[in-house]
Image 1 (cartoon, rainbow, N blue to C red):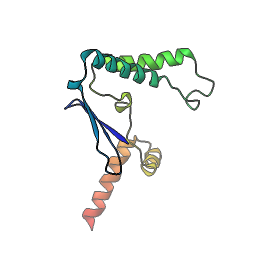
Image 2 (image 1 turned 90 degrees about the horizontal axis):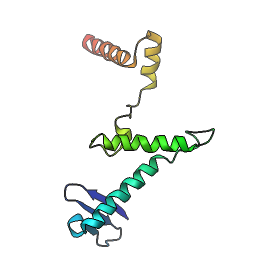
Image 3 (image 1 turned 120 degrees about the vertical axis):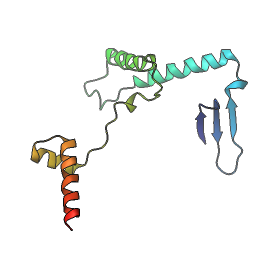
Length: 129
């Protein structure tokens, strides 16, 4: 079973393997009271999930203050008016190539500067051929 949320049509659709017919719930079919409760339930779940801190992230143990900070982080994210559902979107960094990292260290420059230098040298070499 798979589920898909369609924010444009305001539906949730469940699809199944083996040719079984999908099931769709449209928000237009739901009472305002249930829609509001579902929204609040979703946020309560989402905020609480952010407080699920792993032992890897807190090897000395998870404290209630850590959980509180994690919930506050999500509250601040949504209360900012953002349209981003995921908190990590803005924090996610592009992966860095270990060769470029080594070149940056060797040249004593930033990753971006090393990337630019590699590109410049490669283009010079291609132009010389």
